[in-house]
Length: 434
Image (cartoon, rainbow, N blue to C red; front, side):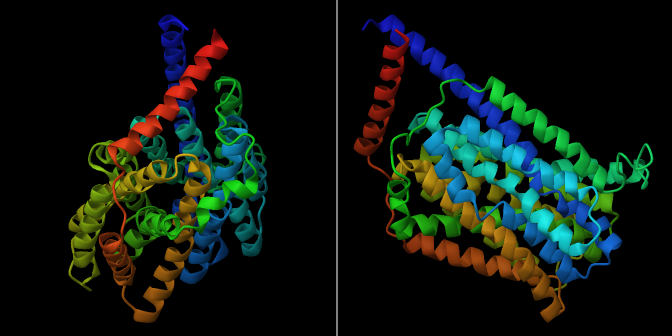
């Protein structure tokens, strides 16, 4: 085989990789916006349905539940059948729930629909496995960081929600055919999900990369027996589960503690979301160069330092100082989310879907339980700082566990072996094209 066909294949492979990353990033951004929409919409929903603080916590947890529990199997299905078809299906799954939400009349119905709409959050595991299949090991940290920056979708509702609630009539348009109020936001997301599903189905490269074609589902579950996999998931609870919880919790926190208007509370929450999302590529790049262990330790240390100040009752009286400390936590979470996931292709290069899915499942589970812990913590102690005390204790646990774990960085020989696998895969592409 001459060098020209190989160079041509590598170039085509690179273009396809970039296209997959672009589609996955945009699709995940929209899906994440749907998953996180109750963070802002929960305020008018609480007023309409007369919810207590604990009931609002259950609504936020219900949405997180739908985007958490199926994550492992979403990743496995992606490795087994390819990201193009699995991502498309996941985007469309949430559409009926959003449609029914336009006509919901009771809180139990809303809880069930929140779980259903939350299924959009499982696109994270799909995208992680899909992008990993299309990028070589030395570029996976940065690529997964770029994809994961789709977490910024959590800020979409923060920006569009309050203006739409103010502009769109409560009765909607055309005699209620197009709903008003918070339901109008769900109405918009229906069209975004359907449009993105069509875009991925039509524009994603064909044939897809399917790393686990031919492997049995039982075999793909093998790595889950290792404690290290579950420990990675616990770390991800601290950097992602807590991120999800705070994205949902902070608008209400700003309103109740500092007496801000919803639009300003949403804006300040978005200032936390941006670094917690957009710095994932930076965290991936750091992890590619210095290793995920060092970077993850640094992220935990920063969150602990900021958490100490936020945990002291009555200490932070200025909303500006509070917002700056929360911004710092967002920076650490953005870097840490990428560094934790960078462990996975190093240790389990053939099982990114299964391992990444389980880690994502555990992390997203934090988005279920943290809001409940925050709600009950405030109710029991009577102090708003209970939120930060809970997070501080959990971050301390993760840092201590990481410090005394027996992980090691992969050797140069192991990294070279992974690169050789990718070279063989590209050679196969060149042969099939030539």
